[in-house]
Image (cartoon, rainbow, N blue to C red; front, side, top):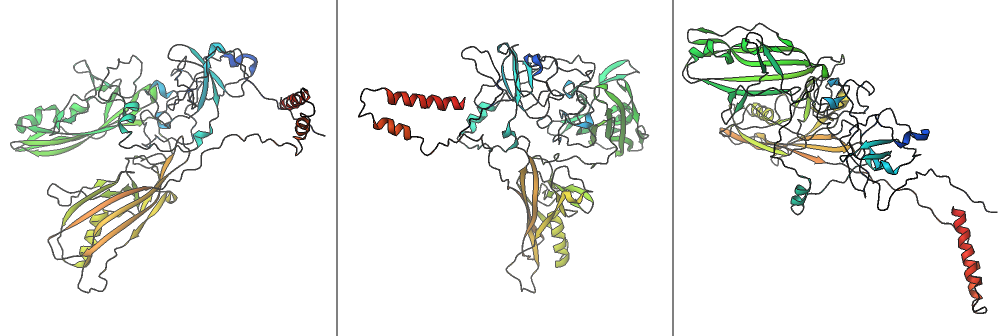
Length: 589
């Protein structure tokens, strides 16, 4: 006895014209759909939209690409959306207790609708998703089990889109190989006009957007102006006072001022007077002075209380604007002499008005959680966190007190000449070791870019390979290190749509030689990053149907064709074959 199994499938019936194909779309920026248009999926109650839409339609291989736009963008007063996008990690949240520009998942921004303030969302700050779209006019009713939505494309045509599962988002992509053969083709295909500038229309919104100039008001003269952040221009870094500060743009600038007659400029130049940096209102908040700052005073040939540093700390509350402005100063004394110069520092920091009570690292992150290429490599000594550094030389080649900062993923080498001040071999070795690895000596390296110094499991110990020299039994030799190679092993982990770089191990490798009596010695430091990522196998497709037939399935065919010779001209073999095939097809349907 044999039984037939019947399969019941859910089918989406589409009324389409000839030549019309579905148009899937892909948008990693993750535009969040609104609830303005339910579309055909609302009829019959077959499709119910979820409470949170993870992203805009995405592309599927083999179809044309389109980028639908949302019919009705959500406004800042709409309270239907969640306060923050539901993401397991926020990779662009690099500055603790501060709002990162265009990071739509940064909780420190306190934005109900980040797109009303940011011009775009950074990759990784919104969900990745896949959609398949067709013209909305072709849909009568949808009974798809997947979430659906109606979008408006760039031509004003409504598109009916279905949110589908895409298992490929959970796997790594193969890195694109770039060489001399395909470099120009890729640059022409994906490149844009990097030097063209377009004028942006002035925003008429009732709140600041990221990068907008900050308005100020001088009550004494009834003048409306902008908050300025002097910056250096030209090879000499001369100060220009016309550089405007941008909203939410934390920035530090340095510039130099030269004085022909400092005795006259001491009390008359507003750039030297602290009062000129807070005698205004940042609409509509007065500037609060954190500590008393004295006015410049000329005493003999000394100009006292000259401003050398200005620090603004501005607290913001999303679209509610600027809540507080604080300013502090650094002041020095200058000697009145011909050609006197002054180097000034200007820092503007933006902080979230509502601060979290949880403690977090004070310094900026190098990733969240994975490292970002070009960000500093974090190290730990005791309980103090700092960055890995290399040697830096002065103009004459001598070793400088300043050091190069090691950037994650960037191989580098540097060297200098160390002028020796002592002849004792033990002290000489100690001095050279300290010069090579810097002070304090790094003991551990952060596994991820957001490692907390208080959490020891987030750091890995730096291995050390001491000198290997051929002269081991020389009693009169002084073996000193001359080079340090920092080897970093790292790999990507996590999802293909959002992989995270982490440090798997680190090692200090020293090279030594016998020191000959000389006034100086050449030293070298280098850092190499080795990618040890092991990519998994790609996802497999759906299992295929395996046909299993009885061992005597072809017996009727053999019997039928064996009688062909004896029954020439008879249609019975053909009739038997058609009946058998028809029976098989009925079993399948």
